[in-house]
Image (tube, rainbow, N blue to C red; front, side):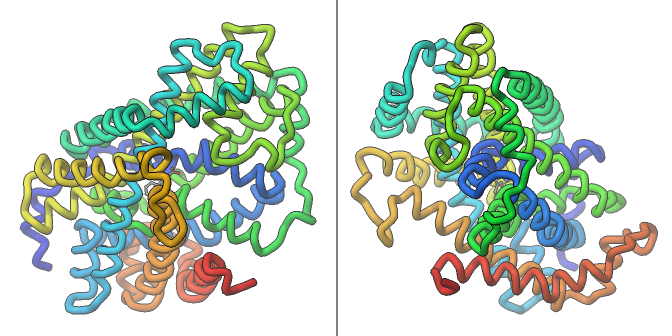
Length: 462
Ligand code: PHE
């Protein structure tokens, strides 16, 4: 492999916990705390959660392991990894697709991350006190459509992400994850306890625990699969890039299981914050209050209503919640940034600083267009979608499923079975009992199931 020279200089995550926290930091993000509760609310609660967990185990785990195999085996960025494993073939386009998607996803994700930063500032300034849903809605749309403020917050979030990535793998990404992930766990734990002990919380808890089987249909299954991919950062070469920094003796199945467990627990805990608090505030639990506005309009109101007799608790609840969101968004944004930075650095022989700067500047431009699409650029439409929605569509409904289908085919069919087995078992030193089932899923189940999600986007199944 002509990457050996490259590998000598390559950084690694220094510890086992560092690797787990960094990868979990990528997985745990707005997808868990914002998107998961919205999807759960819109799809009937517990039934959605059960199908989601099935998707995580059946598709998420094998695909995560596949990306780990590709990344750690080659110890290269997402594009070179395919080049090394399949020289002279078009497979490197899977890596390129991931790099492109990583760039787009960071651009629009940072817009929402910026909103969470603005809302943390509002929460700290106690600006939600006494606001009714209408005034909260007006505050949100005035902010989102403002030509300057969202750009300022976008810039702040991108600069924070940039700073961590520039510092490097161990001192930047790993250290930051090791500090932020435990804080995130503590905050989320405190919020769950507060929420489920509110008066009137039990209806929300029941919503999350009692499945209504009649809700399960093809749309629900497809939404659950899409959510599982987004939440686990699958299909974009992100996990492949992080795995390229794992040590050669790290236990890939163990890391995958721990990351998936953490990610799923945190998504469930976000549900146990939002639904009990919503029912305690006397608001409906299903699609009535759930939607993209959930976090910026509904929740500040929920916290006020549910804790109306305890203003200091409502205040602390809001502040902690928005800090939680910033942390979750930041650790995910860092991983998106690293997909592109490692590619630019290694493929164009740039310094980390230069590579990161190019990525950040690019994201400032596309991110600004996405941010402005809620205001002055509202009338710009691409395929009938706003710029923000179009970017989200390109990543979640196009690049992610296509990337995931191709990754499963690459590892299931193209790579030699022995190569995959050696990588997963650390050359036979680990016992991996379900290896055959894994290969079966990668060969047959994953490509077919994900193709179904993909076709559903174009309404070809209904
Ligand atoms: N998994 C992240 C979340 O849940 C989003 C993400 C997608 C991160 C793709 C990296 C790559 O918010």
